[in-house]
Amino acid sequence: MEGVIFDFNGTLFLDNDKHIKAWNKISKELRGYGITEEELHTKMNGVNNKYILRYLNGGKEDDDLELAYSLRKEQYYREFCQADTASFHLIAGAEALFDNLKKRGIPFTIASASIKENIDFFVESFHLDRWIDPNTIVFDNGDYKDKEAMFVQAAKNIQVPIEKVCVIEDSLAGVRTSVKAGVQDIRIINSGHIASQVENLKQVKQICDTMEDIQI
Image (cartoon, rainbow, N blue to C red; front, side, top):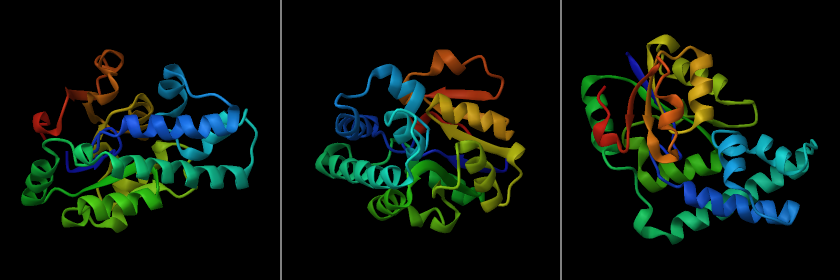
């Protein structure tokens, strides 16, 4: 392992409830009813906004609608984050792990399905630029269908071959796409309760509840 790529939502920041609330609002606006637990896990977690919105819009492709509702959903999400001040912090152990990686000279960055506005929000709110060059962060800029290409790009950004990168994820989609990208070392933060579905994958080396237990 020569580098680390972190997912963000549900991995470094436990915010699943805020996404659910925001997507519920969007779903009600588009479909007249909220999302189900099954939709959340099978159609939404780890998937870019464009394709979630296309799904919620009955599979119809509409670039203008997808852009407008993506921005609206993330505005709702940021409002919910800021309102819940008690939970608005990085997961336990994250800062200590960042410090340890920096001390050891191990490069790391973030690959997230979040849009740029959210990444800027996270960098500013959590002062991520103390540890990570924001220019290396890979986010949903409209060019990526899923996170496979994001992981590949993030590995290039930190100048580490993808097969020598450790990925830290929380979603099934993130695990599956990291495997497709060629990642050989995956650590799970089990915020989405996916342990039983991934524990037999040879690439999964650790399943933890917080960053305090990650051993890299």
